[in-house]
Length: 257
Image 1 (cartoon, rainbow, N blue to C red):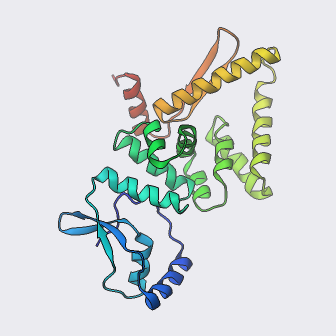
Image 2: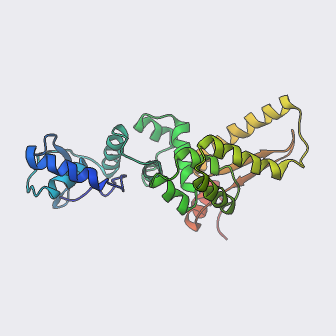
């Protein structure tokens, strides 16, 4: 038997696994794992934690139920099971969504329907993959929350994000404190700009937010939209690798000359 190649869960709690192995050693595996046939071997669809615990307990056989599934369904089953059990950290969840989008061609709306979440929730989770690697590890390992990560995405450069990240960790700042710090930093950059009337500003902010959400949904990357006045503005599209740049260019119909 082999693990699910599309298993979104990357981190297994070793202490919890040992405790489960002790229970399995005494009572066996009560709930069957789900498997699918691939070539000459069985592949786990769901229940990898039980399978690992059974191995630790020295069991040679465990109960299993066979399903006939496509590769896409292998990922969807594993993803949905882990989400229902709340086993995935936000970065694992985002990477699983990304596989559904990039490998299997699902839209944000289709992913949201599969995992029974709202489209904005899926889009916001995917945005965490635009953070630098060190910040993604912080979220994976629990030093920062997804809320911290989303707050840091408002900053335009990785250098500024890492600067704020260090302050957050040193001072133990909450998500709300982090958002306030980010807003202060952004305010210092833009306070010299002309300030529109409050009602006009609200309308422009709502337009920018709607446009940003739509562009991020279509391009699956971080996008910034800034409105200067009723006629002028700026759109910034961010990428974190050349592969991601190529994908974005292809979606925009821009050929690499």
